[in-house]
Length: 319
Ligand code: NDP
Image (cartoon, rainbow, N blue to C red):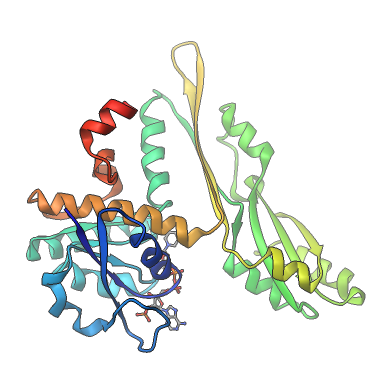
């Protein structure tokens, strides 16, 4: 079956989903619903407030809205009319989101696939899988190398900084400790180091380094390095949105030790988040076609439903 897809919200994630839906063998993109007009795209753009009028034309709707306010305010409204997939990432509030989306999706007879992406998402699956293998699992999640928007803003506010970015990087030592099963004592500050890349006049370098490395909350408790680079290097090397991380689980298996690790190295966070969202969109459309309704998390979806390849071929090739 060809899955007819729609997108709500055209930010970083929406643009990546648009690009990736077009590359799927079994999907076609019907349109993008936005609160804005005049978007720079060849895909038809439709007003978000009239989305429900297009319910019959779309099998799965990718909610590419912000998690801070858009998803809590709007997602359930879409779930009443469409089978949806979101990347809602406020971990503490996911149980509440699940129950709101479940009620809305059941009301409309749809499936609401929630909190896909990589964390939550693929990391969640790997946390559960890893921990299930050990009677007493030791588990740690590390994030990065990743561009941190909030910390980059803090760097750019330091006087003299013309351009600046900050990457959070997991400490190799802490990852090694986790792999060895000694991760219980690892804290956020001991697990991560911060690297800043700054463009500034040479006369300001010392004062900028001091201001950044001693900045309370943001940098002071962390091992922080400040690199000064040229405008050209900044343009060439620091325009992307990299991210990634590790989920490390280890434990004793009645006398032997084993460790399981899931690693992501992402050149573009939105592209990869979109890749996971699109795969779970395929699963949502298939579950809906099988007559299922209600909200599902990534934990509740069988892996074969994510793949465009048929189950018989997957069993022959990959099991
Ligand atoms: P953006 O801020 O780029 O976009 C969010 C929304 O803001 C869009 O849907 C769009 O809606 C609106 N918007 C975008 N650009 C503009 C603009 N120039 N002016 C006015 N409005 C604009 O967020 P991202 O796409 O980067 O991220 C979306 C969510 O994805 C995040 O909130 C995060 O929670 C989640 N995420 C989840 C991950 C996971 O692993 N689960 C990983 C990474 C992100 P409209 O078109 O209607 O105006």
